[in-house]
Length: 569
Image (cartoon, rainbow, N blue to C red; front, side, top):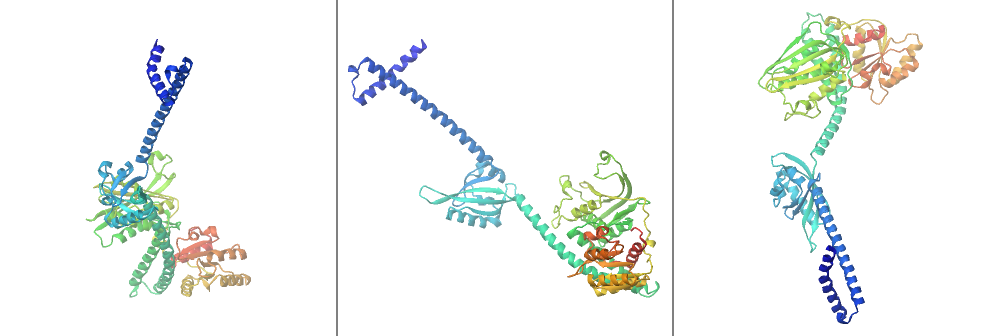
């Protein structure tokens, strides 16, 4: 029944089409045979089906176009890059949601606004010049500038724009891609700082080397002169002050090298309490902040680079002082602690064993919780004039000592830095009296140094300790003298080699040649480059001892004595 109704509804349409077709072809339906009429009707039905199929294809195509348009709109709006269409004066005609998000402004409020109103005042001129270049041709143009968000924050942006022609061929619009390059800029700045720091390191190394040579001559001759006077002599105490100042200058050059170039620590066994007191009082001298040092009895000795650890203490104390602009007390505590095998009980990335714990506490403003995790990051600072390297270098030094550094803080209460250094309870620490003992001996010592004044002061210091000496200005002379002494059956007891000889073989190369002549040679490496790897790991390079310029008479005499007797340092 339904089929008949459908057929009956199609009849008027078919008849109308048939009549139209007849009119076009000039045929008269009244004289057409029934067979021709049926054939004509069949053709019209086929034609109708074809039209319906075409309509269906058109509907599918329309739906696909709509889906594609929606997909494009989503890609456009949520792309990781901001997209804008600007007119000839920089008015925003269209934009995606990413641009609105970057500016922190609703898209509807940005349409018909001038982009220049969101550009930092210092860069508006650069933006207008960029716009002029884009409108002048169809090439892509790029510029970098700073853009202000609605809240006032500024980010670095790169604009990449091309002009758009209208129907008449005129360029009166441009399409712009907006990139947030803040992180890229930060990376570039850090890389530039690192490059500058490396350059400073080379410069500092050269200056420190020359300065340490001068200090060696000053300190050595000063000690020689003071050793010739009785303690009650007039001016004896003044010489002691000069000597102390020279030692402070030595520490400063060591700190400069550590800051600028880093380097492995040159460790010696030490009791750290005096070093902490001296380092803290030195940086607080003349300020309205004082140190209160509290150390437990029988602190365990530690193996440290005294210059580097002094720098750590000074950096942390300076940080604490700056947190107390109104003055106050910095408390430094030292304790011997045992770290157990279970890290879940102490939450420290340290191996099991004995450690020296140094706690430095201030009564300052404290550090915000969101800032605390970044406190040891290089170049991170909350201070307007800070470099962000003080605490970062301190953390690095402690790590190089196989220790760890932590920080706890509460706003309005204060901050505590804790430093853990591996300790050795079984190694006796020399007392101050033992440290100041000049070891005497006998034998002949060869000194290689390119500076005549250094050779002379070294020789006089060794002569004062009972040794004979000869000097060589370079590796060739040293090899000749050593071979002659060996052939004459009067060999040198010790060879002292300067690590760096400009234009000639230095100590690192000369010791290799000496070992070829005499595998039993005993050599001490000396250098003003305290952070050279050879100084930290001298035995690997064939040396038996190490002395860092500038040095005291006691340090030199003890090093020579230990090498001759074979005792460990």
